[in-house]
Each structure stands twice: as C-alpha cells, then as structure tokens.
Length: 316
Image (cartoon, rainbow, N blue to C red; front, side, top):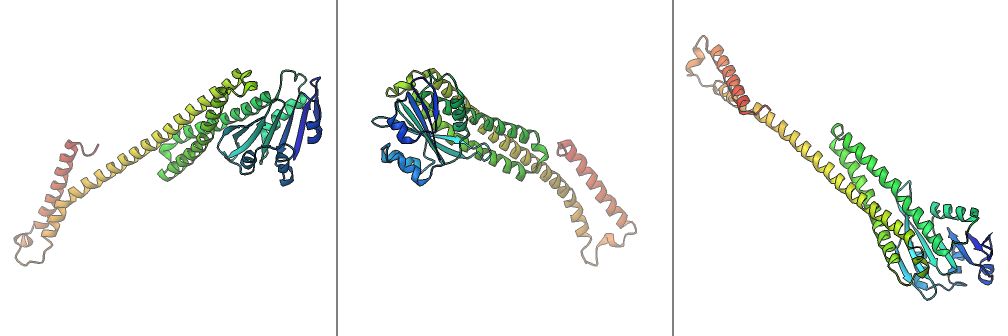
C-alpha cells in the first residue's frame, strides 16, 4: 500500500495524491510511505524515481545493517525498529531529499503510523520538512527501545529476588533468554547509535544540520540505552556466577557431611568385618560379654570421632 502527503505553498496538507501528481505538482515538500508494498508498487522506486539499484536492492532484501548512503540528489538510510511483542528487528528505509521523504517498510510500523497521524493533524507545518519527518520517526523508534530495556531490567530483578527458590535449570534458562534479548537489543542499538553519529558529523546533510540539537538528543538516548544494556549484561553474568558459586558451596557442604559420615563408619565397618570372618579360633567369640563389649567399643569410636570432627569445625 502506498500513501502520500503533500504540503502546498500555503503549508496545507493534501493527502492521497498519486505519485505522478506529486512529481508534476508544485509543493513545498511531500512524503510517500511504502507500507507493506507489493511487487508492482516496488517498481515505482525504479520508475519514475530512478533510485540507485543498490538502494532498491537494500529495500527488497531487508534486515540490512543500519547505514546511510549518499547519492547524487538524495540520501538513503537503513534503520531498524524493534517489535514490542517479539523483540525482533524490523527494517525501515528512508529516501531523503530537499523536497521529499520516502519511507519503505515490509512490516507495519507503529512509529511511521504515529508520525503520519501527527503530520496529517498538524496545523503548523511551516517549520516542518523532510528532515523533521526523519527526526520524528527516528525519535519514536528510539523511544520505543526504552520499554524493552526496562522490561528486561524488571525481569532481571525478579530473577535475582527469586534465585534462591528456583532450580538451577530454571534460573539459567531465564538468564540465557534474557541475555539473548539483550544481545538482540545491542545488535540494533549500537549500529543505530553509529548511524546517528554519522548523521551528526556529515557535512553533506545540510538540511539536517539545521536540526542538529534534535538529532543530538536521539544520540544521547542511544548512548544511555547502550550503557543500560551493557550494565544488564554484566548483571546477568553476576547473577549466574553468584548462583553457580552458591550451588557449588551447597554441593561442597553435602559432600563434607557425607565424608564425615563415611569416615565415622569406616572403623565401625572394620570392626564388624573383623569379627565377621569365619575363622574358628577367634578368642573373643567365646567370651560371654564379647558382643556387648564390641558394640560398646563401636559406640565409643563413633562418639569420639564425632566429637573430634566437631572440634575441627567439620559440622559448620
């Protein structure tokens, strides 16, 4: 589906014009949105716009790395948004010139829809333009990164608070899922941060230089997001290491208890084995109190070893 907005000389919004009307008309600027385009609609990028084949190829083969390419009369941008439900990357491409902006995306975009609605309802477009539309969409994209990061932080806090009551398998599974989402966020946010940095330092994007403070604000948000992601990744590592250390300590404590019990029963087993041999001439076998004396000796050995281990601190 293709939808269009044009701003005339009186800064009035005109909607749903044909592409040929936009190209042949006299407008301040216009915006064309390729929303889930068909193959026939994609052909408009070749004719009548005559965009570079490499830019068209990047649009068709989506999920490219965020970047910008300079062409003779326009600039091509590849950006990435994040799906709020699945935390998957979705590509939004821009063709930016002095008098137009074209957005292209294969999935529905809430960011584009929100800015589109805001543009159609606005009554003061005299200070707007293609570069401002680009800023608004990018700002919405970056703002939508924050709820995902906060959601992951809440999940980490929940894992940290309930880590002692969960099995190691459940804990590690939750941590690895969280680290996977953080990795996906980093693979999106870090290239977007680099893209905005290139925009800010580009000498060819003269229309954007007039709105430098707006794009600087987006860059600051991306820097903050990058720091939050790295901090959360370190937190997942700390939780994992702490739980593994606690689990190892508990295992060592169990092994120590089992070792103490085994050590106590070793001399008792030896005594029982000694008098369990089937030799006829064992002097104690014919003694009237031999059984009680041997049993008492075994009890004294067990008590004595237990007291000695306790003094050594083995029961702590």
